[in-house]
Length: 476
Image (tube, rainbow, N blue to C red; front, side, top):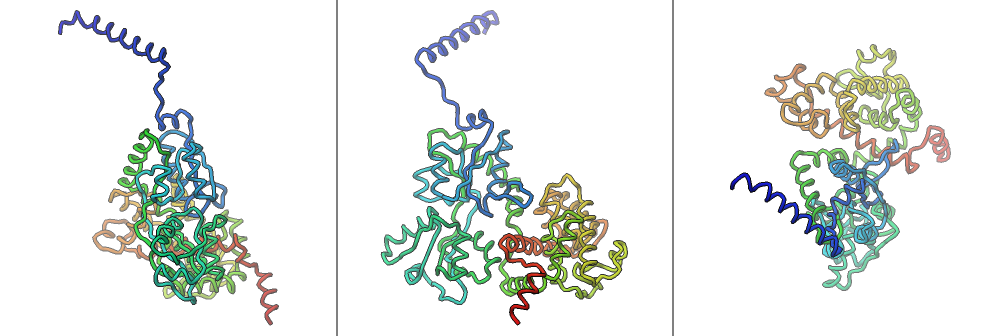
């Protein structure tokens, strides 16, 4: 094409564009911005969620947290907008907020169901869970769904469990249950434990979390498995937000961010140990009241939650001031002779000296962990170092990075620590062999005990020494 024609073509195209825009304005047609662009223009992503330990809650330091909250915050940051949370305890209300355009996304651990799919659209699933029929040990265990008719069954109102029971009732008219709109799953599990009701339905995470607090809870059988969890958005012909979510979930699954987030919130919830939980509860009642004050005093001096220090003390010695290991470490916080000398602790079996010494030692280790590592990862890494030593922890972090992982993420480092027990790996490190698997076990146990102590203290189930004395005298 001759170059002399190009200016003419450009003028023609420009004139055509002006004509099209003018026609659009004259006819009143204005292209609608996409749902995704509207979020960006508003500067905030509004999510509807529920207040629960598995979704969204306020941490001890007042910050917002929770698996769904952190996930939504990650998505909002990618969009370059602020996250605005609207919390409701009513699942139907959460879904309605999205349908009525009061929220952009429902991020509340929602299971994809047929009834919900008629009201909203779902994103790519990002998690799968099983659903359990839950009863109390010592009562008759239901063997099938038919057995629910012989007892009192309650499920969370508006839940997928209620929807599933309604579907089952079509072929099982004798099936009966109550749909409780005033209680969350934690309350219903409490009612089962207290024998106020016979059965409820809980997903696998809720069940495992609460079984630590109520060790008599049991799962009779799986009502369903591999239920898909997803975010909900409003139904429309606009696919921009749904496509952005598909890209987001695909990316964080591939790069490991989703796994690391899951580890942060649920990675420490291990297989339930009935005997171990009963023993812990007994020691909380009988031993902890004698030492709680020492943990609290140490907490104020080093600015570390006393319940974390107490959880460490339980993992170390079961709060036994005379505890001694085969390697010679002693006392509630199991200090070595050298560590005690370095800290100026003269008597390792003196409870106050041991607890304060252990608290100072942990604080020193915590201060040695890079401060740019975000909590809780920084705390979990420090716990591992308390058990295995800073040198071995640094070896594990370097190996983690060499293997393509994130050395600042506990989820990645915990996968590497056991390699310090294998010759082909520890020969590559500065400090050599270490019981890496033991360090992982240590951290996960402390996290578990810490969660239980937080729950017990917030529910008035941790008593002081003076209360313990009064209670003891009252039983004589």
